[in-house]
Image (cartoon, rainbow, N blue to C red; front, side, top):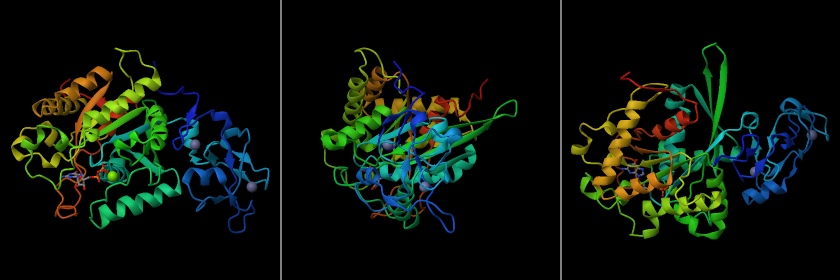
Amino acid sequence: MPLAPSRRSITCPYCFAALSPRRVPFRCRGQAGRRPGCAPVLDERLAAYTGSSAGASLPPVFAAPGRGGRADCPGCGQATGSRVCPECHNPLPAGYCDAPGRIVALVGAKNAGKSTYIAVLLHELMNRVGTELDASLVACDDRTIERYKRDFARPLLEEKRLLPTTASAVTSPREPLVYLLTRTRRTRFARESTASLALVLFDTAGEDLRSREVRDLHLRYLEAADAIVFLVDPLELPGAQASVAVLAGDRPGSDPDSEPINVIARVTEALRSRHDVKPGDRLDVPVAVALTKIDVLAPELARQSALHRPRPGAGVLDLDDRDAVHEQVRSLLHTWQAGQLDTYLGQQYADYGLFGLSALGGVPQDGRVGAGGVRPYRAEDPLLWLLHRFGMLDGVRRGT
Ligand SMILES: Nc1nc2c(ncn2[C@@H]2O[C@H](COP(=O)(O)OP(=O)(O)O)[C@@H](O)[C@H]2O)c(=O)[nH]1
Ligand SMILES: [Mg+2]
Ligand SMILES: [Zn+2]
Ligand SMILES: [Zn+2]
């Protein structure tokens, strides 16, 4: 049973409503300089979505058939190509309407390293990895640009301060950061093909699924997702402490709800009931399960380890390396008495990959990034694997 919504419909990456591509309304371009256009008005749907009227005064939204992705505003006659979701009035990029992108969701317990990972992954995609893949990462709305700078990039990457613990989504913005990752590939006959992936990042704790207010939106999010990335703090695994060189900071209290297997199980059960999966059948949404903070693993472990050599290959997914890392993380899980996590994933998901990464590349001290700065390590691996799964990145084998 396919989890992805029918490709003929678009899923809004903000409110997860299913939309017909032919019924996506437009927003007038408004007046600018000497160009005439409609005056801004309070957009009540957008204000209801963001929970604030700040930034919700915008030129009006109108419905139109929209030939070739453009339409003339009935108010001022100007042509516009800006589309918005009919439900929440958030902008839908033209590339997303034409070739509905895949939605990738991120989940993890409190302290798993989500906020840090979001900050670093986006920076990598905008810079080194984006260049390697010939891919662009574009924020879909202005609020995403501002929040990324203010809450993620500036404190962590510029000021080198650890990010504050994410407040519960019940009180903090329930809005995701939404980006479109677009890759253009030259095929054999010199034709170009473009494919995109919507990265929808809610920075909320997995525990929040317990709260009813948040659960609804998050279940829609997970249900709409074409792939899920689970982040797991290895220090939360029962046997891992022995392999750790330094104990980084305070361990959070033993809240069984935030144990990795419980967070994953809660999400999995929700997905199964939503999708009506028969007992014994596995979910076919690909899931990447990544151990974060692998920089804390003791040096003995690091030697001769696939996980600790740099990712080979450029602009491709090295499938031998992928197998080696998957097997190594699997054996680490078993060594750390967390083999049941692996067993559970195998029972529940037809397609899962195990990863190890470090967003910071070193153990932080006194609330700050370690002396060497932020040196991410294999942070992009889960995403490369998903791009490969979606036919957006070639896989190569060295041996053959
Ligand atoms: N050693 C190490 N610690 C990390 C790394 N990423 C996060 N941490 C630590 O984990 C804590 C929680 O990270 P955070 O991203 O806030 O987790 P969240 O609650 O899931 O958003 C941080 O304060 C850091 O101390 C990493 O890559 N390496
Ligand atoms: Mg956080
Ligand atoms: Zn919407
Ligand atoms: Zn107008």
